[in-house]
Length: 345
Image 1 (tube, rainbow, N blue to C red):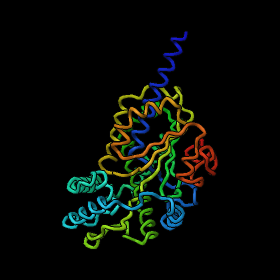
Image 2: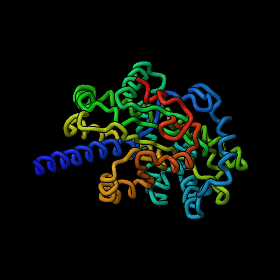
Image 3: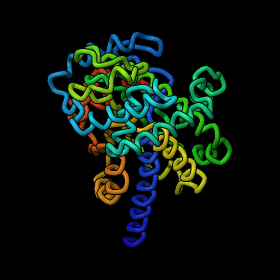
Image 4: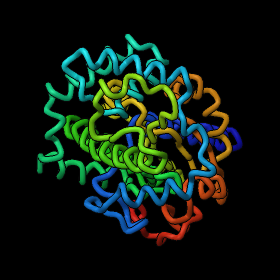
């Protein structure tokens, strides 16, 4: 009897660990939503950049690493010089920064990455995807499938993704991966594009608040190549993975089709959307998974440059301190209604 109970507990840990790994694999590269939530009363068509200036002002005294290091700023400046001689001279500033940082300030590698991204966008028609009603409809289906929503801006002006992982239906996800794999990947691109717009708005607000280094829309590289000082780091985003309610009822081990689809989704962002997330909070976390994460961290968190914090049930202080109560539901220490998306039935 004791041996049977031990096996049951072992299976729960194994299955739960793989489920969390599946979720983190997606989250490390992918956040977003079709609209912002009701925090700050800023919707998809609201004046997000103006509202962000206030949020950045609140956080200005406590934000760390807002300035790029000298090495980073020099690499970005050198990358601008290369870009100015190519057909990609109007590349967005955020993309230049993220390509440099993702390439460990190797300018040649960053330039190659930048070219790959912009060619992919042209070949796949990504710049027009937010005008495609079919793609937008698919993303709404995808959002319900994965139980996520976006609130924000937080106290540092970032978008905040909340994903109710405990509500995942693994059978439905497996079915979607087998039957609608292309729709899942395409929806991921739609979400990433929506998030990219919010990021650009956040960086425009940050530049305005801190003395205006440059506009985020597109950068005139000829005018920027000499700038090495007081360059502001492009904003990242925050993702919150809520494990509350996770159980074996969510199904058996993820199928090969689902794991393969999640790998493809993560690869899209690794290749074409660097720097999407700067911090992940995994909340309502069983203690056993903290040990599990120590084994994974060298392969996931460190290689992507993402900070991952595990918070036990009821431990919301770090989350509130980082993001602020205004963008969190009450069950996560905030002031939004408990049934706010993605917790709405």
